[in-house]
Length: 221
Image: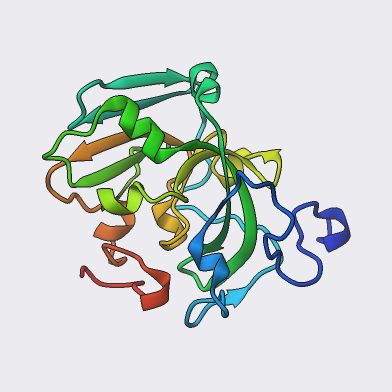
């Protein structure tokens, strides 16, 4: 059995948490990284890159695709090639898991959620987003307003490397200002709806919104 060592972990963060200094001018800085104290209540910093999910890593088809549907004017289906041809963004953000660990100073790269939904055309009646994953019909829900924040993206790179399957690759959502379960792994669909539809963890007792600074871990409201 292999014994874990930070020396063999290229994702291990040595030293102080990354501050975002020296990043290119086009990198979007998530506002929570600029707080004096970047660790929310009852969280602790991890230097590792942990793996957590509901039911294990699913099998992702070779012909991965992303569907954008529901209350949109122009439903879209993007292949991986088409997704990666969209305008790219980079986001420097912290990452807070509801299980009380936080990984600070992540650099994500992918496609802005705002750009994707502007391409699809948001209908006036759309108020919520349902993110769909390849893992057995898994979903999570969030207000449209939260999904359109400037630091939200669908990411295929983390700290300059392709996101591996255990961490939600080939493409995962990233919603930095909410607990990490809202950042759907193995994402395959973005659905816009008029009424809220709690997802897998929300139906299981997790908070419907998930703001880490308000410690919205449990409960419906």
